[in-house]
Length: 382
Ligand SMILES: *[C@@H]1O[C@H](CO)[C@@H](O)[C@H](O)[C@H]1NC(C)=O
Ligand SMILES: *[C@@H]1O[C@H](CO)[C@@H](O)[C@H](O)[C@H]1NC(C)=O
Ligand SMILES: *[C@@H]1O[C@H](CO)[C@@H](O)[C@H](O)[C@H]1NC(C)=O
Ligand SMILES: *[C@@H]1O[C@H](CO)[C@@H](O)[C@H](O)[C@H]1NC(C)=O
Image (cartoon, rainbow, N blue to C red):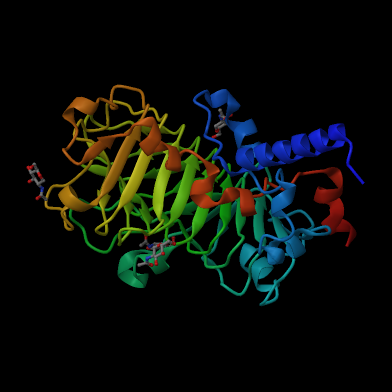
């Protein structure tokens, strides 16, 4: 039988459309230059908005963990709650956890040192948005080693934190003191997201150690190397405040070899610094191939015109680092005084750092859980 020509045409048209959709799908969706469109860009760059990524993409564990209602554990200082400390709530989560577990935390100060071990994936710390809880401890490098000084250390995958203040309250190190590094948060699990969180410390505040991460609508305060590690991370709309009295350095990224995917990409961030002009640098190399990009970011006069720190630096950043800037603004964003290895990126060079593809977010990134009445009361009713 001879098929009707218009059916053939229709078929061709459908194939063509299908092809175009696939093309659109695989093309990275770049962050908008207008910050007011940031929230909707993120919403459209997540796993939840991409049904094709939910079933057969190899992340069946995540699909299974997110199917059905999350388990909710409630922590509070005084109101009725399941536990009075975050530590107890984390302890109650079974090793080999397979279900999304939301630890709801009421306002107040929690003096605790917490590790979420690698056997406990799918944990969300959700602070009361009206009264964000503060988890604080004061361990330092001299007692614990830098990495183990973290107030909260997360070693598991699929972690999320929303509306939580993480603080290391050890005092600001004296100039040239040794062993006073004090980490507020260490994240070394893969596929983690932080929304509306604060990270407070001085030297080595945020250990962005390993894995793919998103930090959004958040605040990081520190003095030296205060965002450091081998993470592969996007920082979106994050306020970064240098409180260094002498020399401040924001990042110490630790990518080691060419071809490794790690790096920090700061998009639509705001740098602040109350201290003297020109005293803070965007970063220095912790390892050979350190990789950091700032795009659409406001840089105040506290940023040194050289941009990146290399005095007495090992490794020698001249040959090996990748430090880029793209469409940044403010008195500290002057490219003319920059070190020779700083790159002012072209559109094409910047593009890998400007989309969710950098952290593969469309495969795993989820929005914060919605705080509905049923959500906030469900733990009372259990
Ligand atoms: C940490 O806090 C405790 C209790 O307030 C205090 O005794 C200790 O000296 C502090 N340690 C550091 C390193 O600040
Ligand atoms: C950026 O984050 C802050 C919270 O730190 C929030 O108030 C603000 O609305 C966010 N801005 C954009 C453009 O999303
Ligand atoms: C750094 O991170 C990348 C990407 O996750 C990884 O391939 C590499 O092994 C890490 N390097 C070290 C020293 O852990
Ligand atoms: C990097 O190169 C610059 C310019 O050639 C030079 O002044 C600087 O000393 C070099 N840095 C290191 C650590 O070798």
